[in-house]
Image (cartoon, rainbow, N blue to C red; front, top):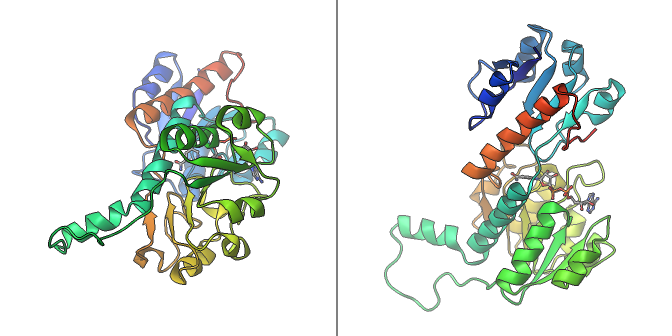
Length: 323
Ligand code: NAD
């Protein structure tokens, strides 16, 4: 009977499936995110075979040392930057994640929710109403920008980036230009997306830049002060990937000095806190890492995280294996 530790309660019925399959399942006794110390002491309590972790848990050498019987980590997330993959590989521990079509679609939708809220000033308008400032229709009130006809720059055209390109071109009549370390010719054929060889080229062309790269040493601060200066003065930046991909202090300076028009962030460099002052700017929209937070997606993520464990212990291929 494989013993599984789940580092935080997850939505839906998937854990019941594990129990029915005769796994021994222990869920964190703590409400919310476990600290590293809490996770380590829980893992030392039993010889666990599997860990179902969240992106808020740092899974490194100390975790593997605390639980030498660990064979698989199933991460309830698409990103896996919270896991030391080299260390896992060295120890023969399998790491799997939870990507899928629904999650890509939902993150892409949230990207557009942010884009529309920012460019059509929805959040500002909402604040304006609640503050009792609306005194009657005014042709000059809260003018924004249309999406149609604009050039959208996509940094990272993988699963989510592709959905964003599809929605932009098919739904909003935008033109897409993308930068990726891998060229995706199908996107060029299907959506007339233009490939550029450097992020700099993209930043100079795009009216809106949206980030969909994984967090890696090569993508940390992909958007920094120097690159923000290359963006058009009326451009917008959207980040739903991982916070440290953007140098957030540099973004704060660029927004404060009206170097770019606006930004929307779902993820933060020092999550959960935005850098000081960011939440007082009117030209930014902030959401609390909810780009994939829909009922359907969360249930699917739970099922995928559990399926990774069931397949592994049944000796089957783990479809979403990262290492
Ligand atoms: P993916 O692996 O399908 O696509 C990532 C793309 O980025 C790939 O095409 C890859 O070639 C490209 N890439 C890698 N390094 C690059 C670099 N240095 N420069 C340019 N391109 C580079 O991943 P995905 O499913 O599209 O997800 C992307 C990221 O979105 C995830 O890694 C995760 O961090 C984030 N995410 C966030 C949320 C959220 O709730 N906000 C939800 C899901 C995923």
